[in-house]
Length: 389
Image (tube, rainbow, N blue to C red; front, top):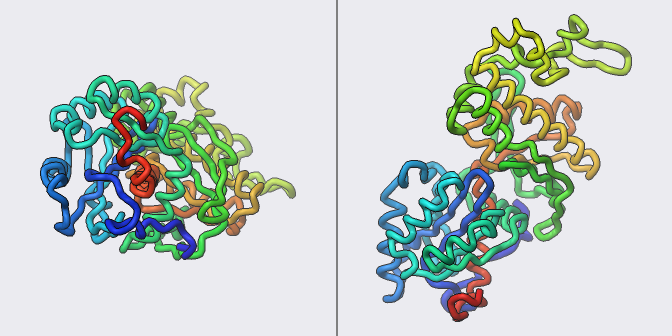
């Protein structure tokens, strides 16, 4: 990545005062809550930190699952990280936002209020659940801007991931030849970030601190999951993706060839026959509805949402004169179908001038940026009386 990024490593015990352990960053989204936890491994804990670190570290790092729905994505763990003058590992944890009260109860059971009086958070849930944290466990939520955290998280993880963070799909339109390929993102600017969560935000990034939101759509990952639950009876995102993987969307969608009998090759419009002309366009016919399986409907739903996001992304990129489009967000987790669709669409409709890029840590950048901001601003938070943050 570019070298002129925000630098957080200068925060050390001999520099500005940093906040006490434990260090968390939390991104409370509309569908998923993402948590990044820094586990210090340098054996320089103060006496006041010892019990705190034992309690938190033992529970979070000795488990992969928490309760019914919490998951630690072990394969994303980043070791040998230097943060705030400390060396340690970054752990990435997620759970459905609908289970937030269970998380609060867990915090109470683990005596978290005795270990800290502030949790730093970003995302809409930082506002929605603020009162619940205060009333139930007497914890303050110190809120950071969602988009600031997203960009800072992308910059940090891309620069510090010892493995390759950024990649693209080579030959995305061919199932047999499609190949995940590393991409050199050291000189990225300008680029467009497409953050696909419950909804979707589109941001232009022209420098480490030069970025803005340029568009958005309410049709995102939450729409896909909601429609799949409604139309197929599935219960989880993973189940919806698994259904889609076995489906055939052409039994649900109306294609160009269904209208023209083949490719549309007029002098002005050169459209392949297998391009979607109308999402769910076959479902007005009773016989087509009877032939469509749950898997087909899930695949058509996924294709509809993905095509819409890709279309808006391309228009934003053209308007902003940007060729690199970076897709992030938990919608892409275990979802190679959408990644390949996005990669193919960006390449095809731009005649190869635009490239769809993806990042390994997908939906955790907001939580990572929140953690970075917490450490950097900790000397301002530290020492304030409880309740004044």
